[in-house]
Length: 241
Figure 1 (cartoon, rainbow, N blue to C red):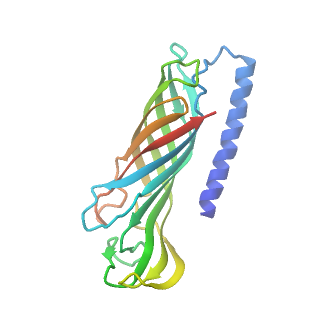
Figure 2 (figure 1 turned 45 degrees about the horizontal axis):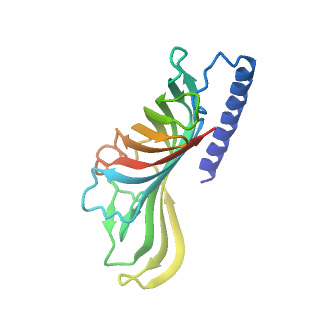
Figure 3 (figure 1 turned 180 degrees about the vertical axis):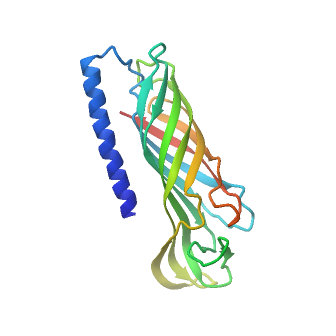
């Protein structure tokens, strides 16, 4: 988590520097770059995630979720300010929750094991999480580019590199659900995971709020180490600045 925090801090610093430079340019020549609905430099996304291609033998549970944060630099088309292209760095995390399951990301096995532990001691709460450094690219359309409160549509893609993958278990119980020990276990390993991720995405909304969907084109796991799983996320985006 320390590496992820430092990466986020670095991205914030870079974003602020570019934003200040962009402000100076606009003040010096306000007609040079048309204003497009506040430009939506900062995006925060909250979504529900599932694995497309997940076999029935993997017992996920509850509302698996994602949280994404991006700093985007918007470049309006000079010929038509309703259209623009945006690009920028960001962080994306997925948290997949399981029911009575052990995920052996640190096991010395040739394949990633998703083992049913219903009949033995197991963690009451258990999840697999991943964190990516991502760079999305969006083609944006704003119905009324002079106003922040306007209909907005965006489509694009994002490429990411895996920063970390870990499993986290909380509160050990026996097969009958009786508490054995209240503690937290965490294991980290990227051995079974593809280190790069390419996703397609789309957004549509009004003002600072929009719905979004993203889908990973390449599988979560390396070829031959497990099922072909592709994260699919649907959620809301809060944008501004």
